[in-house]
Image 1 (tube, rainbow, N blue to C red):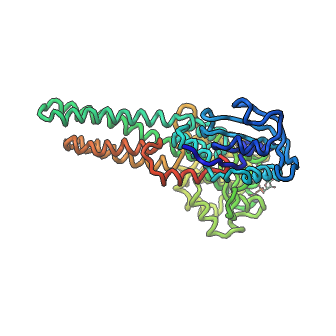
Image 2: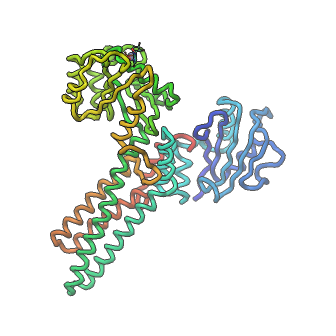
Image 3: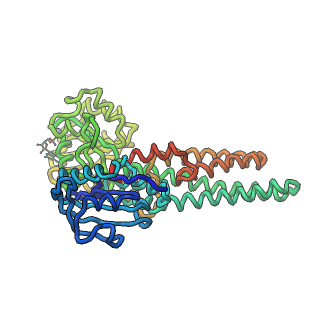
Length: 459
Ligand code: GDP
Ligand code: ZN
């Protein structure tokens, strides 16, 4: 496939000082050469070399930027096309000028995700790997990027591929049965083989789905709300999390919402602290944004940290709020343990037997380890083992796996009711197709476009 050459600013994840203008396509080297002046033209350098030179505006002769230009010729490149990466050092304005020059001299601005789309279209990566790249860009913590990385490595592809192979084996056995319907023992063997194998596939799909909710937390953060009456220590807790060098992201990029979201890393779990604006201003959510808003934030939270003061008895207000959230995941933090205890801990425990209670003195940094352990326990059975599990962390995959779980369950149910195998075959084929969609086989053009348009620019 010969596509026109595309260009965009593509700065590597986690690096700020250097910005890269990346060109990909049949004319990438030629376009770069109209702008590049160095010891040799880029068309004559070896592939996969980095070359020192200058970007010069060919119309004015003005030197725009001192650069290192990496030349990578097809097919051993990310997109499997010729790629030139122009590494610039001079800040966003010069980088932008270099980009504009490439656009003026034959390249087209890349659409979001178009580099990765080309890698996919040129067979360099499969769809789940491409989505892994997208998740990688967005991932908020090291654990999350490990999961994204594994997906990029094709781990999901291998896993789902072997499930598809199992289904093919069942289908082969069904074929034998259909070809020799007169043999009763063949039919019996088929049904029992089908049941055994289909149940194994079902178990594996369920495992993938279970891991998906953990994957989602690692990818998107666990939405968490800190609440409690004024002066109990909410801001202190937030500041502890943030000052402990754990803050990762401090605003929601590209959105116009008025809710401030803050990410902190707790034992590798990214907590997305919602509506912390009120806490930071030392006013409290309830006062600041009104009861309705705060109830909404509470209802949507995956984890609620409810802070009370050990020095004071529980009030009506506490009980009212705790009652309203008693079916959610709540950790009650009894803070100010260093002060005299005036709170009836037993009453609290008896009233809310399903809630976790931890006791802290935030100003002395005590009890917070315990809090962090409880969070890990609530959502990850104690520890995160991303290296041992194949997480599915993508909503499209989850939807497809849920459908596949239903069709394989239908097949199993039919087999148990002795439905003729050629009818069960239909559900098996459907399951096989759904799993294929997870790894990008049999996907429609439209789906591909929709997916890749979600990518960040320059990837
Ligand atoms: P918020 O209104 O719930 O956000 O409470 P703050 O975090 O602003 O804390 C209110 C006051 O309690 C501040 O003076 C804090 O220093 C103090 N405070 C916070 N945690 C503790 C604690 O564990 N022990 C004691 N004695 N004081 C605390
Ligand atoms: Zn506060």
